[in-house]
Image (cartoon, rainbow, N blue to C red; front, side):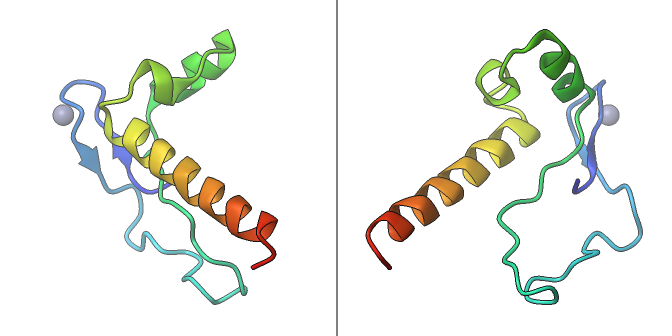
Length: 82
Ligand SMILES: [Zn+2]
């Protein structure tokens, strides 16, 4: 999680003083995305619906779609024998 989404105004706030617990490269893995916590993610998951599709214009929805695009690009590269 990277911050949280205010349920009243949609602004993204900071949860922790240090938002990078695992700097990229520290454990040998790239950081593919930073998703701000939005309580609607849990509600969507409980209903079995896709948060990013249901809330595409929110900070978390955009971050999830960007994450999906990065994973998709990595899979294409891996499939091409990178
Ligand atoms: Zn607010």
